Image (cartoon, rainbow, N blue to C red):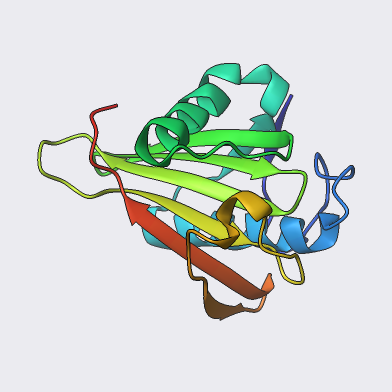
Length: 154
């Protein structure tokens, strides 16, 4: 089932099982607003079980690049292709959102971004490996984020 993310009327639809559902919904809405404002793209997510290829792709990049395995179950995922860049997102039950930004042209930007929902603890698997910077958002409160550059071909 797909869900068109509304960044005006923020909803926890699809995220209800998360203890951070409200904050995660705000984080998801923040991403939707970014894509609408920058690319005029409507951000639509899908239940993770409906798009296992996207969840697998993010899992593979994390494991092959940094040996990371996310313990939290994935709730939703989506993929956006704009201006020659493939953005793949997975939203996890813990309140974590991960995106893989992958420029399709050779030599373009490629990175993995982590965003923590307002109030959530840094997941154990990320705690000793990344420093998180803070960013304020009207929709998501305080977002803490980090990233690493992707070196492999995916």
